[in-house]
Image (cartoon, rainbow over all chains, first blue to last red; front, top):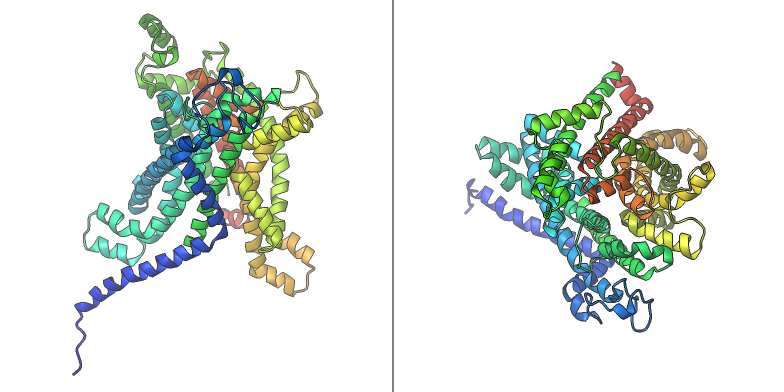
Length: 298
Length: 317
């Protein structure tokens, strides 16, 4: 007996097959990521700093906040591996404990910027026309001033704190993310599933967030990892200028801000070690981002 | 071509106008009570009020904005609260200093990174390529003040080769000034190298792959000629565009570098204005930077359209 194919079953089968394919593609992508050497090196360093951000204060040999007036600006020795700063605080302990603030503030700021940018990118790419023109003009104007300076202006006006740093960096990242997402949305909008959804008379927010968003997720994820590296870069620079993370946090950029005046007296230890820590963190985040971007490219 | 450039000019003007509103909001609306923000919570209310009146921030916002923007374009940028001097003089002096530093950085980085990118592309996939790409990437992502500190320690203090401040003594000649500017330029070179080299590498690889290159090879031109005449010309176009967009980035880097090296440029001026809450100086400084950036992008568009026959001919039709 031959069974007549029931046309009503077909779409169901199709929708059943799709998540499966998606899972295979995802596993494939994960394999590519894990095979990438840059990704592995980057994530080892990054995991080390994440460990320090959580347990750094506990494993540090000395209290990173305790000043020791007798041992101010002591050079590195068996007692103080990385020396002490102008208040006699142990630089080694402060480097270990210093990952916490930046590893909280930078991801939150990036998350905010990615979320806002994705929403704006979806709106401008979907509606196009006048909404698109106006929003993209404002974005261009924001991009005409370097991020650090824009952030400086906003932080002076609002007063520096971790919350304002997160908000300000999130907002200055928005145009950059929005541009990338908008480009991806523009090419998606021409595809049939979007037309179909429009013909079904779906609401615009539904089409944007439930239909288009899952399909533009790869560039969004890549954008997030790339921006994360840039957030660490920018927040470290703002902390170095005294407008980022505030004392008494043992943040690396802030440590350099507090001690770089001593450099000309050849007191290099309170500056060099936090500088190396920042460099290693930024390179690690970028290596991870590079691995992720490669996996999503093909 | 003229239409293309006019359109770009029009867009730049619109962008500038929106930017001026953003800056105005940042400096005169966001702080709420500007006088209070400057003088702090302990200041007497009558002092705050008189400062607000002196700054003119007690007037309606629209009036303030119109007044600020019209005097800005008449060259009157107001009076700096901290320095007690006209903002225009401070900003133009600082801008000249910054341009000197930026020029040194560009003169070093542009040839270096273009040659680096081309060499990497010609050795695509081999060890030399990987070395240039990876070192370029690492140099690009490390913040300028971090690499700045490293070069100060190594070249300024331990090897004692170069001065660690950027400000040459008053009245020194060209070469002395240059000597003082090399060390601060290096961190900027690091950051820019990666971007420009990456563009030059990508452009060269694309041009090497193109049909016209294969044709040139097949008709028996020597490799040297093919690369010079066919590959480089096409590879360098996108590189010019990226050099211009990096100008804006460079000015951001200047804030950090000029602060680290005690150099009285526009970046350090903005930093000082920010620390002292000198809002008139801050808003003019930021707007001037926006103008510099837009001029640089316009010049890049001009260079790009002069060099690119596709735009040159398309627009004249």
